Image: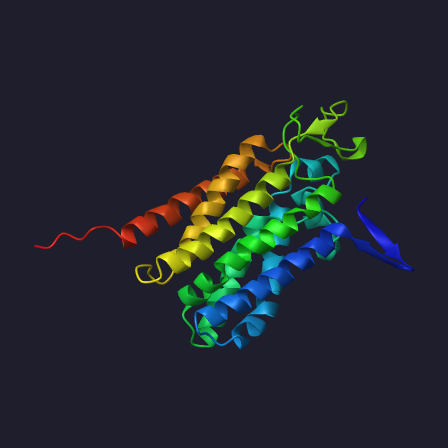
Amino acid sequence: MEGFSLGPLLFRWGGLLIILGIAAGLLLAARESKFRNYDVGIISDLFLPLIIWGTIGARLWHILTPPLSSVQLGLTTQYYLSHPIDMLALWIGGYGIPGALIGGIIALFFFARANEYSFWQLADLLAPSFALAQAIGRLGNYFNQELYGLPTNLPWKIFIEPAYRLVGFETVETYHPLFAYEAILNFAIMIFLLWLARRFADTLKTGDLFLAYLGAYSAVRLLLEFLRLDVSLINGVNINQVFFAFVFISAGFYLYWRHRPVQKL
């Protein structure tokens, strides 16, 4: 179920859908570049730094905040520190979206600075693409039998193979398709951002679209974490939920501050 073979080559659905998501995001970013009268070449120049630093950030987040499924397999932070080679074995363990966001933002900042672009303009350009790439990439979680939610008997429940069930849920067969909820909501965020960019083109400030993306996606993740079983805990606290709560509040406050009414003296 995780993939298929062509001769000696094994293709995993999860990886293929991530690649498809990135490709779709690039196409959308190129389209938005034309809409904004930017040089489309910026997208191809940005591609490699974003992928490299996004992957590094996502991997480090997983290593430092492994979810319960990894901990149950012995893939703890201490394990990675004592087996540093396995940190580079990207097929062992997984990745964390918070780290991918941090790594991507760092790459974008230094790219903009080195090439004398506006960071906020580039971030606005890429915001809908981020949402689209995440939406498509999330579908790979179905084939990997991961990122499912609490047990449920709702009509859209999904069956999880016994080998992929968490400890304590060995006899529970059906769960919320949490990855599907996030994929659908990410598509909705993409549509909302594209509409926002066109409907309020004359009133939006540079950076507003990216802040709206951060706020909307953080709200989605913050709420969906309540349904998630395979959480990342530090001292009993869901660190992903804390991270997204912080981003949601920060993005919302900054948007409000930028558009606050200014009283004239």
